[in-house]
Image (cartoon, rainbow, N blue to C red; front, side):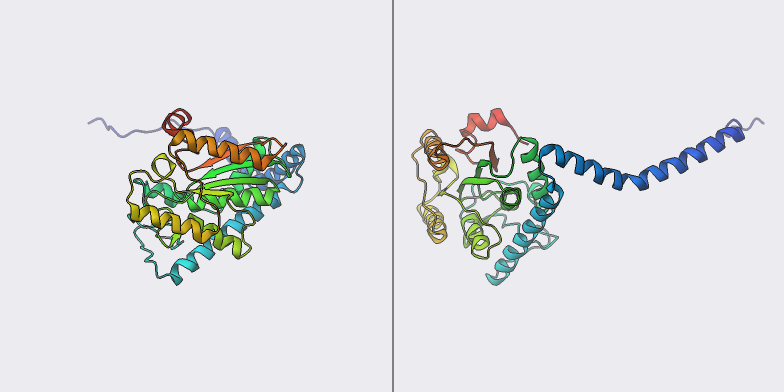
Length: 286
């Protein structure tokens, strides 16, 4: 009876020696790669004109991590339930699934993924790649939906030495800064009061539909207004998207005076921040 087992062809000794040598070379190359990458990073930083870029990126990540810890501590003080199912890493940066100030459904895995302090270093590298240098003025628009990414961008701007003009909104989608007593205006104020972040919003809108919580109850709008009032930052009110966008443009322009913004950064899906529904659809994510 003929056997059906597969038998490979005999491999020559020379081939085996070649594969062994190739394996050794590969291992040595991989062991040397971190040092080579460090040298490459230093060269790139020099080309950017920021020789201490690596140190600045590390500082931004550490600042973001400190900010996360401060918010976690505050939420524990407030007695917020930190559910393992929603926040398995116990970061304190994931808000409730539903609250009176929640605007839209949120994607929990996206919110969980955003809670990485190293996004501050990523944000800085993106800014530098876009041409931002220390001393440049930048514009930031953000919502309460991704507080961890807000912190990452604020941290990156500060460690880079950029000068941001920030307009934010209070409302949030699910799993963001959507606890009525711990919204983004509260977080921003907490981090500034504790000297963790130096920059604060120039103005804060309610957020949500038409950037003014249109369609939400009077009680909800009162909670949003109370959070903005607690922060001490002026309310930016509007009647529709067009007016909200115009108000933002005027505010950014006045803050910049005769300077030009190097970049505009948007975090979250703020209606007015991305140009309304049409802008959001045309720009897309990322």
